[in-house]
Amino acid sequence: MTMATLPIAITQGDPAGIGPEIIAKAFRDAPDVTRGCFVAGDVATLRRAAKIITGPGQVGLPVAEIRTASEALEVPPRCIPVLPVLQAPELVQVGVISASAGRMAADCVTWAARAALRGDIAALVTAPLHKEALAAAGVDFPGHTELLQAEAAAHLGRPVQEVPVRMMLANDELKTVLVSIHLSLREAIAAVTTDNVLQTLRLTHEFLLRTSTPGQTRRRIGVAGLNPHAGEGGLFGREELDIILPAMAQARREGIDVQGPFAPDTVFMRARARDAQPGEFDVVVAMYHDQGLIPVKYLGVEKGVNVTIGLPLVRTSPDHGTAFDIAGTGQADASSLIEAIRMARQLAL
Image (tube, rainbow, N blue to C red; front, side, top):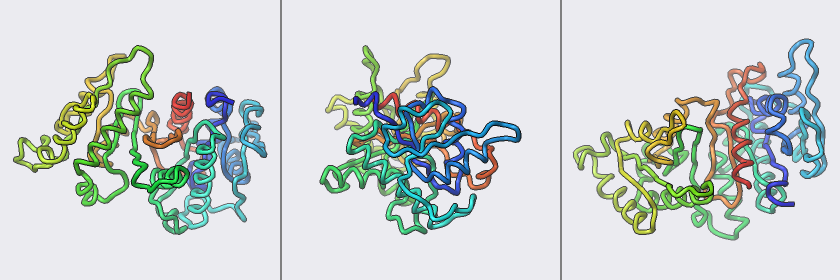
């Protein structure tokens, strides 16, 4: 099989959250997108989710237990193929943080990452997990990105620091890549070093090169400053002058089209694509988590996709969390997950 014909794994996420429900909705509402996909998870959890989204008088969504990933390619539309990579001793309570739910979520991601690294699947799409549940389960990683980085490093036989990864959040209007990910704000500011900024620019440029359409020549990166007004020439902080600009200068010497640093309160507007017209930049490199994610999510959580760049595998995810407050009600919107599956398929080609 080629990457284009291999199945795509969707990890079930935290079973106490909305992950299983949005997966069930995706298979029900977007059969063209989910064709050739399967769920890496627990069969009973997905059967419960299928019941949750089925209204009175509606025909229930079937769940098929498969034995191998390749069997997903034979499952008919609007049927959820589940590869039972784990079997929960009992269903976890919906909407409640628990160590057992965190462990299940982590085990599904670990299985899918290893399958992708072996070349058994084309990509993995991860439904949301809950960081407190991960911690309660004793998982050493704060989120998907760090767990996947560790799995990739182990597969490659390298130290984790030699497999740098970054989070990108994207929709059809804006793309942002983060210098740091899941850190406190104080730690995130300390992580703005010349090496980290330069590494982010390199990974972003490599991603743009790999995903360029035929004939595309422009791959322009805009850089957000750390301080208000991008430091205003050192009046509001010297990080732009002493840290960010030297990284950008080295990136330019390497042939990377990088501009800035620009005021963080305007650079995202300049990069936004509207009315079929591209923005001034193809992607914005942001200095920390909320700086880069708020603009993309403000444009519409239902359109956003989380992509991990730098990994030797394709991983995408919806841009929202477990939403424990509505889990079990059937209200969750599957749009972001559907977009994540669509993007994973495109990136795997």
